[in-house]
Length: 223
Image (cartoon, rainbow, N blue to C red):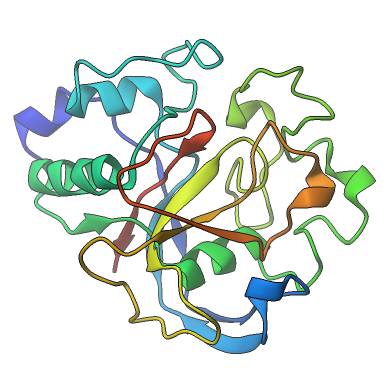
């Protein structure tokens, strides 16, 4: 491990073993559902924090709704999220990147086939997510929540998360990571939405150079 790397705040990585997952659901852009294989990865246990992102971009301005060091960094464009991955990979000497759509949904579902990883009833979501019902308009710490079955925090609600996949119709390939300036897929919903508006399969496409105050990201490393 390099001395340079130890000077920077590090994301906690969680190992996910390979597995099968049914991708999609009842939303118009999440059909048809299809079976996919997700390879083994390390994934950050929660979205990248203010302190972690500022190590890469010192002039980053924290959101008024997410001011703490350990709070999620938001207002992040896709190009900056991808840039963080490249910078962090250079520090570590390892290949870090954004997750693909399939990796993200596999990680979110935690082996469950229900609408949410905690079942089909949205009323059971309070221990696991921040949304318009319980956030009071503030982006709260993901680690104040319970983890999903794979040990990951904030996979639903909290913030929309960038993936590396272009926003294209289903079915898609695990290798479909896109190039150039295509719209990229955001996943997960946010603290500003009611949980009835999102699920494990909810997707949204945005241009790579836009920023929103409820959008962040997490990172992965292929084994």
